[in-house]
Image (tube, rainbow, N blue to C red; front, side, top):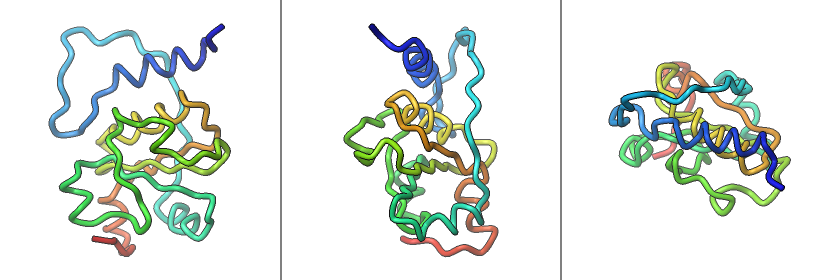
Length: 140
């Protein structure tokens, strides 16, 4: 028997645009059930980078990732997240970010992780723009 919550989250992930700038528009958006995602500030993410059980995922375009990303962040398309692209430990801390608070790609990534059974999932709404604005280092 399928878990109805996971089926619902999977349906929401499938309905969410995969990229901020080039997201396809839908003629009639499906009714969406609210999924509250836990958030972290830039400073909270920076402090979590010291924890080996924290994994950060960049959901920006590959080109934007190459321009600079949070140190240790792994690039992954939010619409292509699978268990293979995430750590084996479903209790690990996962942090997803994208461009900024107006971009929704990290929401898709986080919802995909939740649908796969991960329990410690966060987004950093400020995105890479907020990270850079705060003067945090980036990796190129």
